[in-house]
Amino acid sequence: MKFTIENYIRQHNLVVKNLNHQEIENAISLIRETIKNEKRVAVCGNGGSAVAASHYITDWNKMVYAYTGLKFNGICLSDNIGLITAYSNDLSYDEVFSEQVKNLLNKGDLLITLSGSGNSENVIKATEIANEMNVNTLAICGYDGGRLKMAAKNYVWIRSYDMQLCEDAQTIFGHIVMKSLCGDILSV
Image (tube, rainbow, N blue to C red):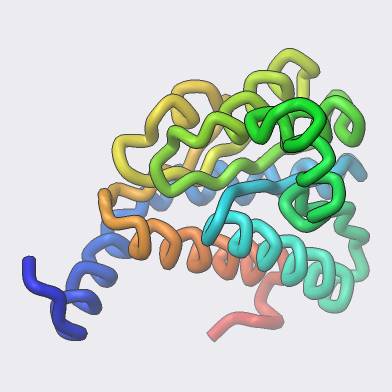
């Protein structure tokens, strides 16, 4: 399909329309339960997904506490460039998130991994390690879901093979979660 603004917006609207509401509701319930149990939420991704992961934690940490008074213990594993480059240099880029999971997360915490393709090796390894540690796992993935969709205990699957549309939908998911966690205060 030829790129035009109209075609992009049409495809964007179709991707958003096809988001599975039950998958999103399940994800919100999992995040809400993690907060209620005073456990940690960690997120990670690569490239645009790393930026979306950072955006989640920025919004969720600030807004949940500001509007509900509940402490949100969130961290983005993609944000510490020193740690990422240290693990990349000393071990492998495939280990940058799994090593942080081993060090920072505990049973009952939640790891949210983002991948447009669902096949980013470092988020898959982090998910597998988290599962072994009895950390809850949630993947936000596009394309056919890839290996990440199969590895995670829970997922929100973005049904698109367009990376930019997958990243758009990742951002929309983050805002839906924030508004849901904050309740009617932020409703449109």
